[in-house]
Structure formats: C-alpha cells, structure tokens
Length: 204
Image 1 (cartoon, rainbow, N blue to C red):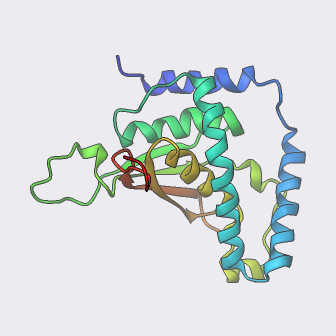
Image 2 (image 1 turned 180 degrees about the horizontal axis):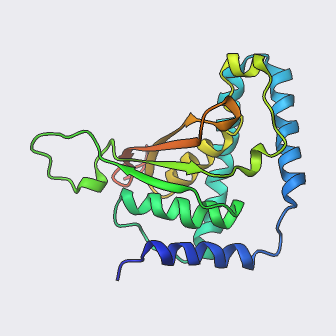
C-alpha cells in the first residue's frame, strides 16, 4: 500500500524526536554563518562561494543518505513525485526539523513518450521553506546581494548528493530567498536522469 503524505510527515517527526545527538539550533546557524564568511574571504567571488557551498553539501548528502535510509526504513519511491514528498516531509524534518511545502510541476510534454508522467527527465518539484535554520540571525550586505550569493546553497548540494546515491541525477537550485528580499525561499529539484542502468567503467 502506498505511503500517504500524512504518514511521511509522521515518519519524519518520529526520526527527529528519536535523535539523541541534536545540535543546538543557534550554534548550528552561527557556525554555518562563520563558514560562509570564511569562504567569502577565501574566494572573494560570490559565484565561486555558491559553487563551494554546493560542493560541500554534495559531500554531506552522499554520507547522510545512509543514516536517512537506516532510520526511516523507507523503500524505493514509485516515482519522482513521491521523491519530493519524502525529501520534504521525511528528509528535511528528520535533519533540520522543518517541513517545506512541496509543489509538483509537470515535465515538458514529449510526443510519443511512454514513460510514467512522474518519472521522465524534466520532472521537478519546488520546496518552499517557511523557515530556514541556516539563515537565522542573517542579514546579507548589499555587496553579497549584488554578487548573487545564495547563502544556503549547501542545501542544494545535500539534495543532489543524497539523491545521486539512490540512482537519481538531479539539479537542485534556489529560485528565491527571503534573505535576498524575495517573498519566499524556494528550491527547485529537477530530475535529469536515472543512473541505475549505468555500469562503472571496467565492470562487466
């Protein structure tokens, strides 16, 4: 039987409550902020800082997924639509104690496509974060706004890294951020392709 949205939310809440190694939210936010400041000082280029934050997140994501799968005991998602539900209601809840609103968008229509609607390349979902623990106490200077800094870009890398470990190549990118004066903070996750058919070089 398919898991419902409400059940996913309950799983996420149970994992969060069961965590014994929770980090103080203020300390977490301040530590992350100090990391971003250090990267800005090191690279003096906001586009490069965005890239480095995403790369750090990717390396975190490829490690977090094992913990996530072990704690959640969830099986393979039926389609990319279900992936969005799990990322929002279980993933974000169990690690950051927030539950973004997930909005599914249809992939570009292709004539003669035999794929399930939720599984074709181009399928995507948007996560709207009502709150962002990374951005507590943060106000971006004009220079960072003009330079195009996505302060919480590490989240995009975490999503990309985690999903790659379960055979999905995705692109995750910020669409908007309240730190930049936008009305909401949104991340779009787009399915590029499934990786399960690919065999590593040198393997039979």
